[in-house]
Every structure is written in C-alpha cells, then in structure tokens.
Length: 215
Image: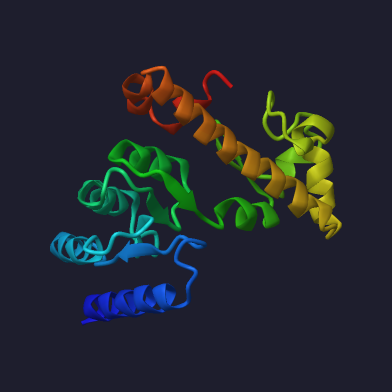
C-alpha cells in the first residue's frame, strides 16, 4: 500500500512538473522505495523507470537499518536503474556505506552526518571517529587530522577546539563541521581517482580507510 502511494505521488509530480512549464529547468528524480523487501524494490524500480526522468534515487534506507541491510538493498536496486542517468542514494553518509554504494553503481549522495556530528564535537578521520569533548584531548596539540588541508586542521589544535566546546562557543561546531565536510570531499575525490586509475578493486577490498591512504 505504501509503495503504491509512492508511485501515485510520483505520477502526480511528473504531471505537475510538466504542466508548470519548468520541465527543462529542474531535475525531477524518481525515487525507488520498498524498505528491505527486495521484491518490492524490484516492483517499484520497474514502475518508476517507466518515466524518462533526469535521474533516479534509492530512498528509504539509512533510517535504522544496519550496513549489511543497506548494502543488500543498494546492490539489488542500483543495477535496476538506467546506467545513463544519475543514481542517487538518499541519506547515506558513513564511509563504509558510500564505498559499498559506489561499488554498486551509485553516483550521488546526501547526508546530514558531517554537520550533525560536527555540531556535537565528533570529527571524522581516516582512523575513525574522534570525540573532541573527551578529556584526553585537553592538551592535545595536534590538528584533528594530521595532513588535512581544511581550515580547522591548518589553524587550530584539538585542545583548542575542545576548549571552544567547553566554553559553549559556536566556532567549535563550525570548525569541526568544516573539517568533516572536507573529510568526505577527500573521500569522494580519492574514490574518483581510484576509478580513473583503474585501482578501484584493490582499494575497495581494503575498505574506506584505504581511500585516505595516499592523502
């Protein structure tokens, strides 16, 4: 029932978008739903791709499922979408999930993870997530990620950024958010380079951290 409602809404959106005269100005993507039920995913993908849309999205994952379930849905659904149109995975942001999704054929992502974690002093690094509010960082002179070229890592120490959070200074969240955004930008640039250099298979097998090995 929910899937049928999604498809009816899709049809209404397509009709309204075409009637607005702005069909060539905005990219209306068709969204494939179906939860973790792969048969429902197949059914929805078949119906959604009957419209010649600028791109297609996989929705309804990363809302409580674990990485294994996300991967199963994405690996099943992505190949059902046209290969000549952008494939967009909605709301997925952890490195392991991005790497698995790219491997399955996904092109685009969006997620609040970098900024939401940044506001809470949680910084992504090539060695994993670090929580800068922890007392062990009180006298740590290192940047969040040694070698990172973001504004936070070039100018401030872990101890100073921790002090900002302790003082309820909003600059702390801004700096960690900027770092996190750069972290994921570097991850995607590394993935692009691995694909371009035909080194994807070897690096993907080693996991997300491998994509920062040369950074």
